[in-house]
Image (cartoon, rainbow, N blue to C red; front, top):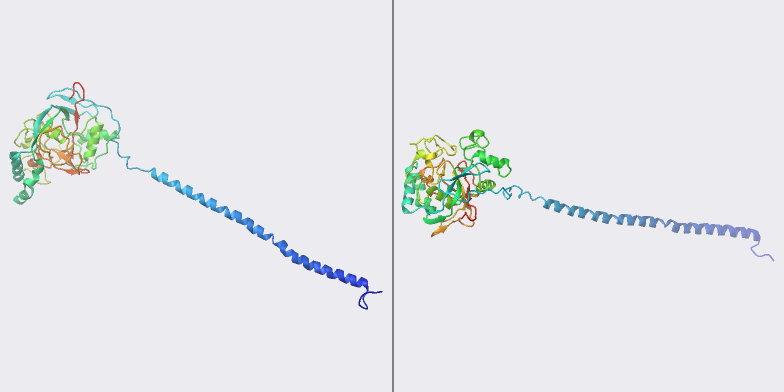
Length: 382
């Protein structure tokens, strides 16, 4: 019995089924081909680990940046310009000496005089106070200036007069010179002066013609640094005044009466302010050290009056009351003290009791210094 519609044979029907089956398989194959293309996502997801690896590389940059601060911290340059703490060769003056003895300091060739132990009256009493005001008025340019500058307040820091006892010590016979200071600069132990000229000279420090003139334009700390290099120190204010006045308490290093031939001060050549037109000391500015031997003090120190003012070790402050033994001044302060008057000063300011204060960084063409040294401590020392 034949199965199928009339006119169809079994074999045609079978071929037709094969064709339909092939079409269906082809369509299924195309449908299944879409999932086959889905392996693309793994390709894109495979790129993610590579991108995800970037953050560690980026986070490794901050450590490199954080290592920079230690380098910046290692740049504290300010401590460099302090050569003073260096260990200098020990220089010891003779342990025993007497008035009139001298000793040459080997470091810089400075001659020192011995100032024996003793006691003196430091500051001004009523009579000396009145004399200071008298001298100030005498050398003022006009009455109005005298009233403004010659008051009791102008000299009040010289009071109260008090007794001071001191051990013996050594003191430079003259002020430190340009030539001596230059040796310290060349040894890289001192800082050069702020200015290389003087009041009337463009070339002064560093010019061989002025090697024997006092160095100026140095601060108090520069002066202290030089003395340390030389194996010495700055004198205390009491030591300086004792060397100038002596046990007798003289008004000037040579005595109680002013004498313009014994020092370099503001004479007829000095045109920078009030001057003394009756005397010509030969200089309109600084003079070579030791130019006025007749102005020596009782211990043989020269130029303690005039030429240049001289830094001392102390802070500026009021005098204490009562007797003092080896005083060193206030423990702190805002000003330092130059003593002795200069080529720019008149007699009232050149008195050995005159004092004042200047800022710690003060330098001028009229301020220099000299050094002192204590006796070695031991059986023969103090």
